[in-house]
Length: 356
Image 1 (cartoon, rainbow, N blue to C red):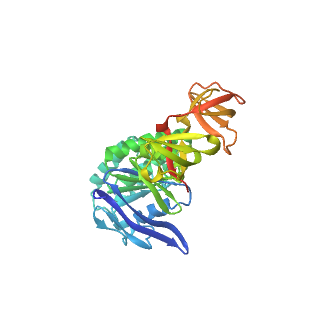
Image 2: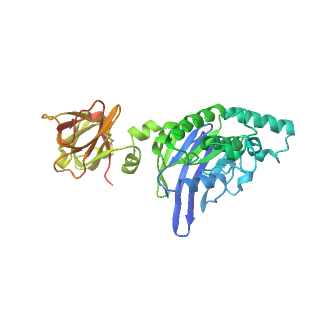
Image 3: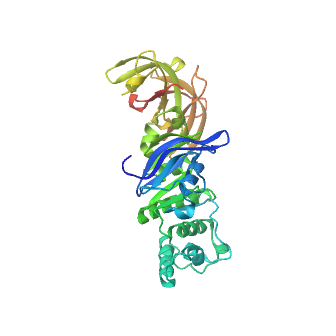
């Protein structure tokens, strides 16, 4: 990508016989909030640590703002890192924690104090410079760690699951706050998380990783609505899968024989997947499925489980001949376990993927 501010060029990292990162090759734009998303052990933190300089690639090159940084130590790179543990110094107050990295900056004391005050205002703790570190809440510690990383004005901020130690409510509040800080300071953020909702809510783009490989890079909406493989579709949200064989295509509609699920339709299927006889995987999100009392339409099944979650109910519907129940997310659903229902969805809602 020509507008890449950070360039990851064919990066591989081996630990003995294990490839922790396998030929990662992509760019991150200037000022972008970019997330590395995947399950534990997928290689996302190793890749982040290579950008930071805490690990060195076995192969490949890393560039930041056009300059090669592959072999540079962390303190020689135009980046800073925020860890999950925060690493706040307990013997220093808030202001001294934030200003710790400025001690060898060559700035005057007045300039250092001005930077610290600016950072305190940025994290909305303007009157807490003298507060002891052990008097801070979890959210405040996270903000101080963020300010300490930003006070040196790096070109890139790297964040390794920085919200992982917070409870759910505080974590959600800090997601909004962190995104707002990123917009205000305007620098490139590279964020590591295993939480798909966190990545979807905060990121401009997301790289989904598995077994050391980058499976897909896209904006949140594209990842959710147009995943490129089963693994991405399954990791981002909940998905129903139906194995089938293409019968034929007429106009923009492709018909698929899905066995016990019957004949299913999908619109605008990729040419490579629409030829008759092609084995495919048809995927449908739970919220795309219409739920009605039993009639002659589409799939007929019985509700095997139902959970009321406020504005939306989550149901599991068992269909004869299908190994797994179908997940349905519906508003104002009143069906209870044992109720017979019909399920249907528009051809536009179906995603057709390669059979793996």
